[in-house]
Image (tube, rainbow, N blue to C red; front, side):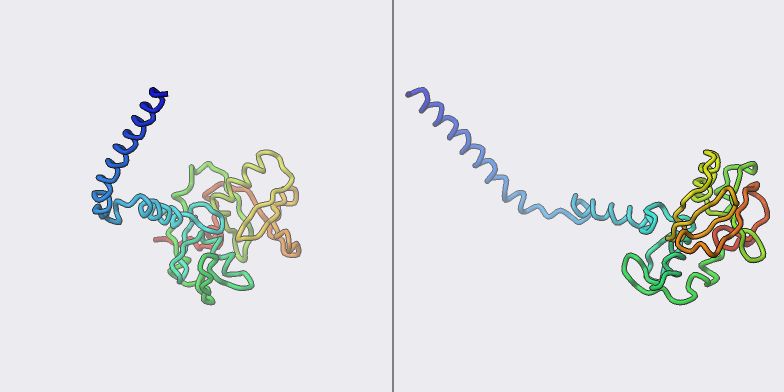
Length: 208
């Protein structure tokens, strides 16, 4: 019995020593005023903010041909176009309205030829095009890769999310159309990447 009591008193003594050590250290911890730069929580928040600024909130990918809306949120050009052409043209993040004609402004659509052709892997690469008025448009790089992969798998058709809408790419008839609006069909073609075209996904190619 005496041995049990001795061990209990010893544990209690050790606990008091640990508590006294913590108490002695507490004022030092409270006196420490870490700067915002050294705060783990704030650093993590800043990191998340930086990461989110590099992601288009519509497609959840890094923005392709990025466009800044008037509210300063950044989207892929095609994703911003989908928002703009919706029934209620607003930013999907802050709900700020997108002014009429905003995406047609010169500083939004002007891109140099090198900007587009810098994404090309080689002059012998294959590129998919869709027909527009008075010419052909390139599919943007991500959609082009998706279409080419499906074509290589000998699929009859592909469903692709473009401009916030589901499109059917019909390889048998070489046309594309919106799944919810089958009336309007556009011809598509597969050609060399440097074939003559108007631009990429509605963005006009212009010489620098």
